[in-house]
Length: 94
Ligand code: SF4
Image 1 (tube, helix red, strand yellow):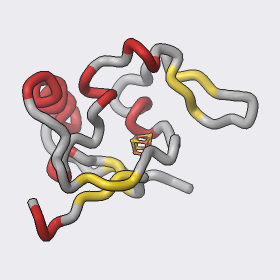
Image 2 (image 1 turned 90 degrees about the vertical axis):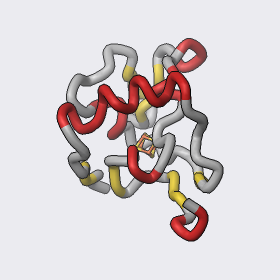
Image 3 (image 1 turned 135 degrees about the horizontal axis):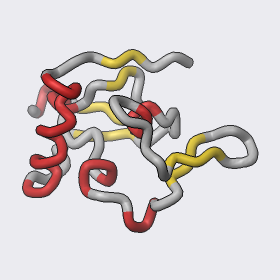
Image 4 (image 1 turned 90 degrees about the horizontal axis):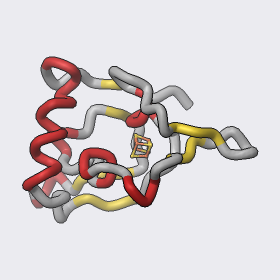
């Protein structure tokens, strides 16, 4: 399945997400789970820690040590730029 990316500013909002992930929590309305499409690991600059398992699915080579912007993505609906993504936000409670 192809993942679409919606632009949300310079560098697709990557700089914003870096700083907000340091100080803001994940939105409480977030549900779902990562589908392991790998799209958020490949945009702008492909992460050097992105690996593939035996079945070809993406996996993080630094999962335990991954930084907040990876750990929290997508932190909020406004910062979610990949669709489809396994995570969703309940718009009724934002
Ligand atoms: S968080 Fe979303 S975009 Fe990133 S790998 Fe998981 S399903 Fe794909």
